[in-house]
Amino acid sequence: MAGTNASGSDTAAPYEVDECRGVLRVYSDGSIVRSSKPSFDVPVHDDGSVLWKDVLFDPSHDLRLRLYKPACASASSAKLPIFYYIHGGGFCIGSRTWPNCQNYCFKLASELHAVVVSPDYRLAPENLLPAAIEDGYAAVKWLQAQALEASDSWLADAADFRRVFISGDSAGGNIAHNLAARLRAGAPELAPVVVRGYVLLAPFFGGTVRSKSEAEGPKDAFLNLELIDRFWRLSIPTGETTDHPLVNPFGLSSLDLEPLDLDPILVVVGGADLLKDRAEEYATKLKAWGKKVEYVEFQGQQHGFFTVDPNSRDSKRLMLIIKRFIADNSI
Image 1 (cartoon, rainbow, N blue to C red):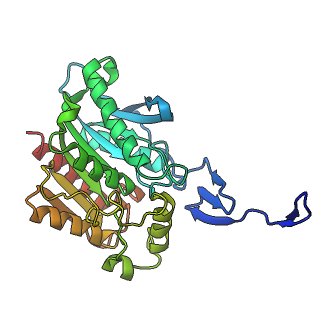
Image 2: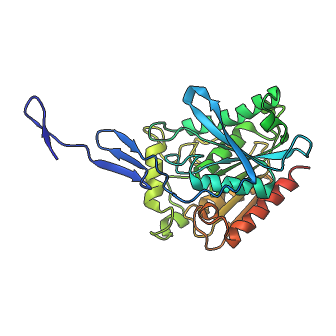
Image 3: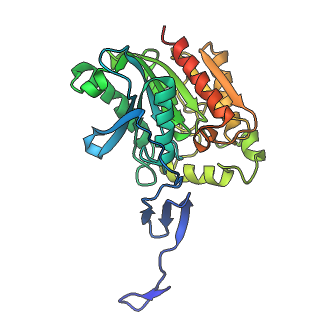
């Protein structure tokens, strides 16, 4: 409804210009409204077999991470690998506290028999890229401090700081890629922490030239083209395009990955995911450059199938593939 200001001229009420999954709304006056309700409102399946707690890892930005470990883990048992799971949401939505994220982390901790680290990061449009990437880096630097201090027995008694794997889902997969490129093989700057590999789950990459799967993918896809464009519009730095180095690994100004010494990378994507071609191109190019990369495509599956239905046959198969990847790269 229009109003009138002190000078007598009409002023239009702010109207919605962008909306993401019902939890983020951006208005014409620049105001932003976030719902406290998650877009995936499912029950949390906490049966007590996995212990968890929250930790503040970046006081300057009030960022927390959630730690998980099997309840059977103890100081007297063998140390467990550490598996980062960085949530997705197009850099605009999502949280370690959302039920779908928590349920998947329960499964990861239980079935991989690992300590799982699920960090939050600053979201757009309030915080444009590279904020999320820097927060991902801060989350792994936090682990280095834990390894050096060993002051938290809850973590130190269970975790093997020399077997760390960094995974991410969608936007989290993008963060994992950028960490791999920044940290290089073994992540020497994180010593005594040793990173052994990366798992990119349907990584959220972009580019100004449409891929075939983006251009021809179904309009009713779980992650459709309109939503992909909206996420990028809300998250990339002002004045930039989707060929930005943090968005497109192969853009004109992107870091040259060919000469880099990288840790092993597992790339996973659904065959019906509009991001499929970008994930496949990423794996194909890195393989051609001699990197240790494994590409796994699940026929007919959409974006995020493993968290949407973590008990499906393909989700269970994916868990076994991740478990093997960890075993193969822990020697």
